[in-house]
Amino acid sequence: MEQFEASRALPFPFVLGCIDGTHIRISQPLKDSISYYNRKGTYSIIVQAIADSKLRFLDAFIGHPGRCHDASVWNNSPIRRAIVTNKIKIPQECHLLGVCAYPLETYLIVPNKDNGHLSEEQKRFNYVLSSTRVFVEQALGVLKKKFRILNYLELQNLALAKQIIMACMVLHNMIIDNENVTQDMEIIEERNTNSDLAAEEYSHSQKEEARRKRSRLTTLLSA
Image (spheres, rainbow, N blue to C red):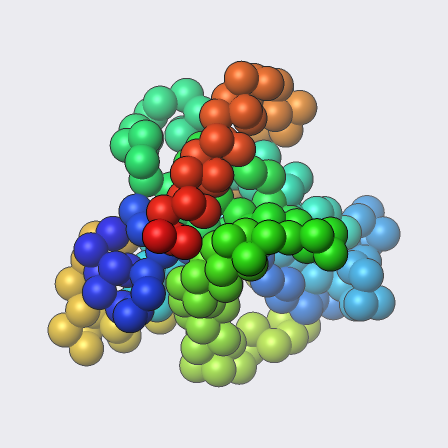
């Protein structure tokens, strides 16, 4: 959190990490290929990544079919399950930052959707959030530039594809470690979870609290 605050002249407060998803192109899978056919007309698997201000990956969830929505990937991710069940305890004031595709939650703050009627405070909030959240976009960009194989995995073996992607992300972190950046890393592998159950566990009152939290942060950033 301190590293994020030190990285910007106008930082977004209390950030533990930034989250985003990216598609890795693959060959047409032998089974259930339609699920991997994304809106760009290619076959892909999704990588959900959480990065820090040093462009290190703190968490990676790999393998959802390219047709899936980011919110669905998040709902099924082990990191969210661990937060919901308090296996990972996040202080009340702290959070991850994501794009509008993710749901607003007390531990995941996303921009206000631009309906053409945003206040100046809300616009400022969105700007500051985006200027910090861009770290994860940069991390994914650096990853793909370092490891050009990730531009297209000519594989139909999905398990092998996931292993290659994870290996590249681990090597990415090792390279940063060798540049004298020291911070612990945890990568969580994919597990089967029930997205409907995960969504239900986030109650209406918690959604209201998430909205109130975003409102408080909006006021803080406009001060």
